[in-house]
Image (cartoon, rainbow, N blue to C red; front, side, top):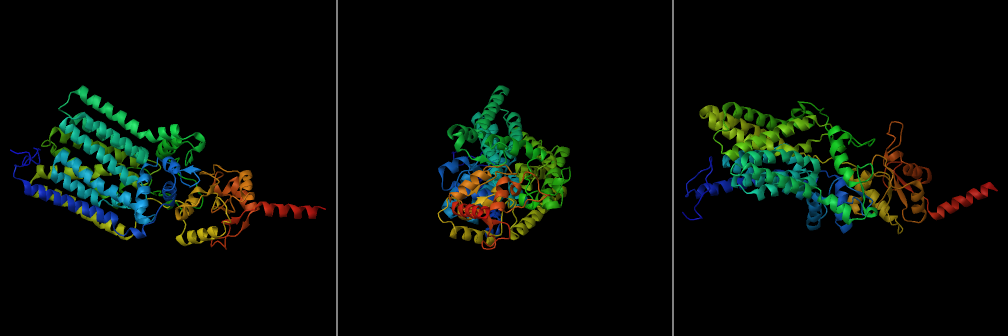
Length: 569
């Protein structure tokens, strides 16, 4: 038999050498699924709200190599985002090619969502054959959670694609006995950590299970060595950016990492985005900012959270999650896993472990956002695909057909929910710091027309509010506080900058009341100095009262001192 006509044997897909039409059919089927995924994720982007916090960093990083490496949020390099900038590098490249607009900012996430569907297909096909792979790919393509996240201004869909790529190459390595594949899988998990930090780590569990139980052609020692290599690769790649930042960028040139009490990127990674995400301590303390702007979920932690109607979790994830658990129980009861190859059985066990870990972790997590469930969305679709096909084969006849019909019905409902979400321009990035576009345009125009050569467009009490201006026009801002009232610039330095003409306006778009936390941007010493010494020009800038202040210059300060001297004679 020639190499062209040979077809790799598989317990569920074994076919004669002449099965070329089947291959063509499979390719067209996959192309159709990917087209559906792309359509759901890419249609009607123009009206999708964006997150100015990360978009400001994308604009700043696109004009400075220093800002690109450090993940600086503002052009002056004072504050960095709270995560490695790896995913934002994709957005920088996209906006440079397509323009700094909604499409340019969202394309990387859309491509990540479509790639995740393709990689899931490859993973499940390696484990359980093309029928299961097709069902799994369709399940992920229409899953509302994945559709909405892929259309959002976040990093989660790229992270999801990366971990699915890690599992896909590991599955191929387990089946062929190639240790290099699992090491590559570990490196991809590390890359996923660079993209979305601890959200990527639940995938390490199925990777370990799949390799240790599925690479049956290798000795235990070789399997253990391969897993050790994967762990080393994951740690090396996962910490690479932090190490480079610490070694290559002098301490005085590193921006303050948002969310870190001491400004350290290490602390932002492991405390703010690690421990505090589990315990709930990372919730921003921003008075007057709606919870929805931060992406918070009203559903309380507990067993029913992921199937709750609150925040749409039942439709976004809960229906397919419940279906995945149902078919998994059916497969276990019917022992329908037996026809699978050893690698396929290990793969099903790995997907089940991933599903269980994700369900427990995100049902219990204190600081939860719907997009975080992308960490195990692939397992939901994989279990649903493998489980439905295996249960159908075990039951046969009418009962088997009912299993497939039930899975298809769930996916039709998911498709309908996704279509509705697309029409409503739903997103899950949050709009932290966002202002109405008309307000931003008026404020930007006012500040631009009255700069008089100032280095900074404005002195901003809140990073999140400054982000809207940076995303709009890319001008340097003097950021007075990092977050939660942590001061970067005190009143003395601000007064000197104003007197020297480096900054002419202050923006304080958050109040300071008895109800506000002590450590809030609006109550900071610099914000109080602006209110005490500045002249309110908010109406001229098209803003509500008490937002924009003209700061005293050396000339006005000298005049005030002279008047004070005359009155004192």
